[in-house]
Amino acid sequence: MFNSKQNVIANKYPAWKYLLLIVITVIGLTYAMPNIFGDDPAVQVSPAKSVEFNADTQVKVADALAAANLTVKSSVYEGGRFLIRFENTEDQLKAKSVLKDAFGRQAVVALNLAPATPEFLRSLNANPMYLGLDLRGGVHFLMDVDMETAVAKAYQRYVDEIKGVLRLEKIRYRSVEMEEDALAVTFKDIPTMEKALETLSLTYSDRFLLKPVEETASPKILLTLTDQTIAETQKYALQQNINTLRNRVNELGVAEPVIQQQGDRRIVVQLPGVQDTARAKEILGATATLEFRLVEERGDAYRAEKTGYAPHGSVLYHFRDGRPILLKRSTIVSGENVVNAASGLDPQQGSAMVNVTLDGAGGRKMLATTKKNVGNRMAVVFIENRVETVMEDGVKVKKRITTRDVINAAVIRGQFADRFQITGLDSPQEAQDLALLLRAGALAAPMEIVEERTVGPSLGQDNINQGFMSVLIGFLLVLVLMVWRYKYFGMVANVALTLNLIIIIAVLSMLQATLTLPGIAGIVLTVGMAVDANVLIFERIREELRNSSIQTAIHVGYEKAFVTIADANITTLLAAIVLFSFGTGPIKGFAITLSIGIITSMFTAIVGTRAIINLMYGNKRVEKLSI
Image (cartoon, rainbow, N blue to C red; front, side, top):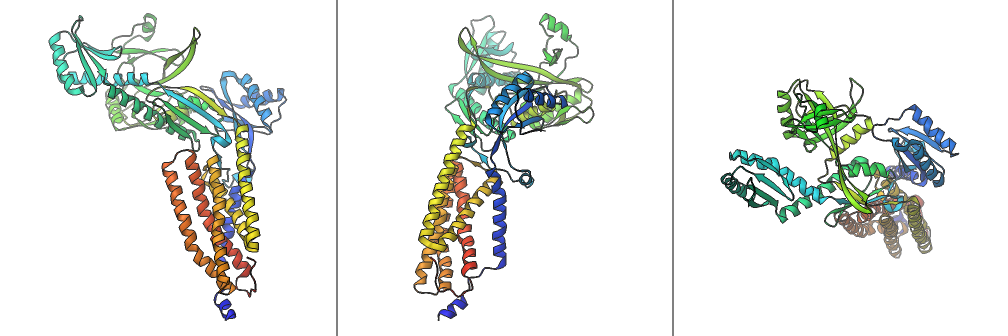
């Protein structure tokens, strides 16, 4: 009876299953390996706006470091910047000060961490996994949205709309302009004002409080936004800024950033791994946009600059080199109409340019304008708004700074609509920055960074060491317990558990997922859960040994325990999916590692251990199991 059962159940895997296991193990080891090499402390030197690096720059960098007796591990120029690696953080910090003094305002010098992965692994696209802010370090910004400007812009948007409504009803007005915290619409007499009041009340009663003023020389109507409209405007500005920041951070290539609302006017931005804080602040805080205007050819720009008065219907602007130019007051299209923008090189001149694509409305306006103005010039105005806090008489004062520069004024050679190029930019870096800002969209209101924290690499390393120790201690305790409880079978489970940990790290590295402290907690939990499946299988084999042959017990133990293992892991996986769907930040990090760990543990516990057990005991006469 015993012999017949051993012959019926051989417990032998086909060759392809062993091959699959070997392939997965090799791939797992390959893509997990980059994580053991760590990072090199490095200094990144990037050109400032309107500056280009050349061969002389490389000599300047080398001479500055040599004069300070600093030993460089390697220096690479790629992507328009220098990345200089050092052996230790002490040399890194000293080099930053030396290079900052050497370049001044011509370059942005920032600390960085560069992966020390060997070249043969990088050629396979094997990179270490991203580490979160709590592990790798990075920057934390608390940004305050200028709600007063958001409301002022809301008023400004209604100026042209109100003019259009009055023209449609053929009501003559003198002016529509801001007056303190309201829009003032003035008229020549009271009957006209009363007629306009009736029209505006029908159109804007849900958005404005309308107040007629008859005591002045020119009667007028004051339109004040309602509290509800102001609240909606401020809420929109906050959400629009959050969305725009997300787009800009995506363009920067930061993995798993945290961008969250805090209160009713502030936004928290955390950028793991970012050491170039100057670059991050420049991109996040800029409210840059474009305006396209026709050039006023009939006026004298130099005379307007001297007298301070521009001809009627025109506005005085300046090129970046200081030359004055007169532009039409009306805007053709602005950055809000931009759908896509990509930097490139002008094939004719070899200079930097930006390819712009407009939306339907912007394309129609551009087509109508260029059709009528072939041979005339059109200017591109670059507008940048920012809020800075300065000290005046010992008191901190917020100042809004707006710069308007004409970057290009070219002759319209033919009709065009939604696709065209912007040239006249100073450098490829400026073209990239402008394209980035246009793609990401404009901020609804300027923002000021009110708090900035840099999480240093020492704090991150402490967290990494503690997290690593927690995984190691938990892992070793499980190994010892399994060997003590299940003998050889316990050792097999330990091999599968080690393979499971390697595959988890490899998958995280291949997905370039971000590992945080909660993510490490998910790995520790997975280590404990991974061994549960083996415990269920081994206990079932023990039970079957009382009534069945050894080969039957092994076969039944794996087959019967599979349903229980699948049920337990699927319910946990569903919980992890819910955490990932509804959680944010650290909770998502925990859910990702837990989900990956559940899937890999089922593979290693069921397929991995079964392959080794079949290799040891399959299709053999066995008198006793070491379990």
